[in-house]
Length: 369
Image (cartoon, rainbow, N blue to C red; front, side, top):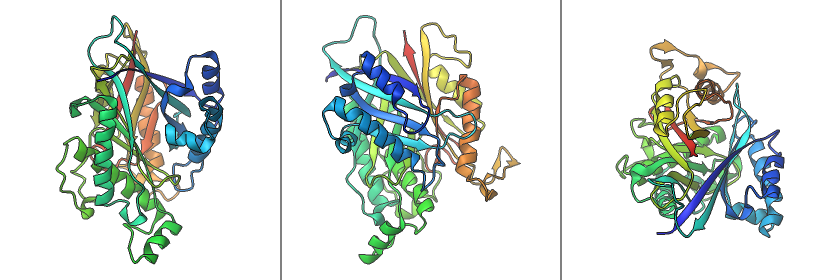
């Protein structure tokens, strides 16, 4: 099994097209662009179907990195996994997180135990009528297993976060399916985001053995007792396949970083956030753990579908001015920011089958000095 050193850097951005921070680190030698495996970002869009800040950010990053990789911009996206999550409501701060991986001959002295590892895989392209259905679940499960192998992770218990970028439906895609005599899971572009996120999350759960593999099409967005404790899925218009990034700990990793996770039962579950921080040796803000440094927190957020949180009614689902996903991102983002001491955290809305209904997974990466 190969030994790899995985690095993680969080960089603040001034806008979705801002690559100055990344390019400064590339110019100084702090980041080798050839070692970049994935970039996860939060952009200040609406997180909806027409949130083009995600595509804008990816284009800007690909263009900036192209000359350093000796590739045309459109091929950079084939080499690096880009996952841009739109929506920085409340105190959430736009930023990107760079994940690098370089092979090394052996672990340096002083590094012991399991350390951060990352793996990546892609599914095949989906037909529009496959989104939100068993085909997407099955293919995602295959890709998760492939990404685990790429990360050098053999035990599902060592997987702490699986980030997926998945497609959504547009009117053109719905019409294309109809022209072939097929119906899509929904004709709503916005509604399709939930179907795609949910099926992708169920694929993670199947791959990790969290649920059985006999999932039916009608279980998606209905059987909320079926979920993954580590899946984070985000849908976008810019692709027709799933990009799968597995983050976990591996004995073959020579990384200075470690990842842990917990599962929020609802949008105000501060105990789960504190548990996730504790899993990597950190406490709440101010971070004062000796030899430990918070790098970033990744979480999913969703309005409780039964219309209440711990017995008290909320109005997120009835607000016709602001989407419930935006409410949820702001609420969970504020809670995490208060406990972590920073708003530069990755909180994504829409947690269908990602943790229990109304809750979601939360993962923490720490640097061990």
